[in-house]
Image (tube, rainbow, N blue to C red):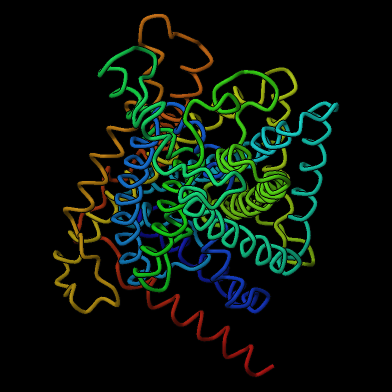
Length: 513
């Protein structure tokens, strides 16, 4: 079968599924979509994982790391937004862009890479929840809490999507309110408005210091610390840029500044980077720096309330990632890149076999029973990191190919609904940045005395997985396909027109009813 025929069949299937997605859209109202987009990605990777970066790098390097990462994410998001407005492939994953703009093999590898990332994020969130519960040091095995979250998350994803819309709206609202409150509280505490009246100011920036040495002492240790925390910051936020693309780029800037950079700056004022619960291996270790900061300030009860909110956040984020993982493999099946059984839906429209496949991966959360939650948490961060890096690199390459195809086909960029201010230089920046960070993922295992097989495997298994997926597809199904679709042959028109017609037909059908 020719390349054009394969892509046409995938397009036709995509159009049919888009009509179904549009029909389901009223189940999630605009307020649901906006609030979930703003708060849905604020999971425990941020609320708990930021403690890992603070303990390694210290306050100054932590803030610098978040500012750098958020800046690159903003650049990447504008590239994605330009592609999404020109080729609005509703109902499909970003692997569709890789298929259309690069090659089918890239699309195949990207699709499974996204499924892997989202599926791994579910046990990641459950593991983070075990860390959060550990703050209270309950006399119950982690397996009990893991089982409860496992049942709740998987059970909800077998139900109609409308059932979880209100819950996600509520939890996103609570998370955003909590972060806003913590920003204000950190300023109040720093100014001496806490229960003790002690003016903390920038005390924790001076003692234990603005930058920590990690693994080795001195300036080299602080440089390694910065690299380590930059990698850690990426962990668990694989879908962040994709889900955070708003209706206008200003909204994205506001989200990154107000709900990423400012809360992190605030927590560095109230939580010392050498706090025992951030660095020790005992009970309650690995707790959220937000909770530790409140407790350090002597504010009673509030630390437990915030910890409970973070626990609910883990459930909320796990639920979102389970949904995204199941829809990713469903999209793969629709495109013919996964077994057709994953396209089967129940009477509520839920792809139940797709959900089941993700449920099986979620069982990895039980690794916490035999190992400490903190260790398993770091394993998941390392495994998810490489999936994120490959996704961002490939999508940046897809953007460059889009620009080349537009030039070859004489399409005026000025006619696009949205134009990224960073363009191709921004895409090259993303490729270089994420390639560098990807190569350094797990770099610490190569330093003297730091070698651990588990750390090495979890850090680089994502690289092996992506290469195997790409090469395997290229040597089998894609052996007769071009390595890269020539710019002049990239189809930039048909899907755009088909999706517009399909969406219009579905909306007309809704109105007629």
